[in-house]
Length: 257
Image 1 (cartoon, rainbow, N blue to C red):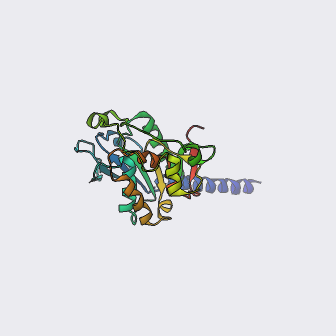
Image 2: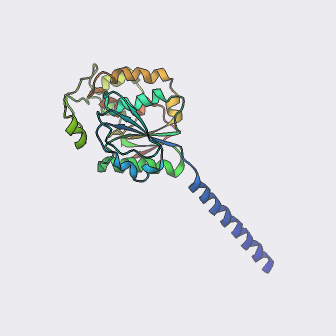
Image 3: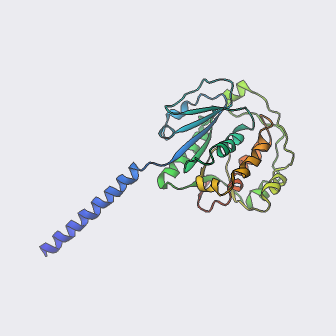
């Protein structure tokens, strides 16, 4: 009886050591996340905070100044101020198509705003849990094309005060095709995507990008590089799930659930 107890105790110790070892291995695992920031006039001080301060950053600077925080190793690329953050994200995909991170986290420079900070943190923390893709957004009843079919904007101004102080423009270059549903049909036909994200915040997996050729993304750039405040940018913001369709490998999280 004593011998059986000893054997069981040894087995328990082995299992416990193995469990602790696996936990430590997960903690020490390096997750390949690249932060891509679209900046205009923001100070980017939020990059000092976790979880943002753990990952490499590429900043696309669309503003007329360089008065912003730069963490060690940050790569700064000055680009023309066109297409808002939506142009920036597709531009990054095109220019880095052959050297993408496993998880690319696209973020606006205005992530200091409470609603954006909450969502950006949440998204990165979800990726960190499993090292797998997630999509945090809003669900629809009948797909984004049908639910948002009539969406269009005649004017829009920057939501961030620093950006607005430097560029208060609110007039939009209207989309050649509007409303949203007509534009969607041109690009994506009958693809049914149930979810979308707002705020210029999203994480995309390498395989979801690479399932389409570089030329596919280059075609989108031509719609976004004509004006600093294009209405069509707001269409792209709502259509990322279609742009990177299919996304069957990604776990959807309803941000309102």
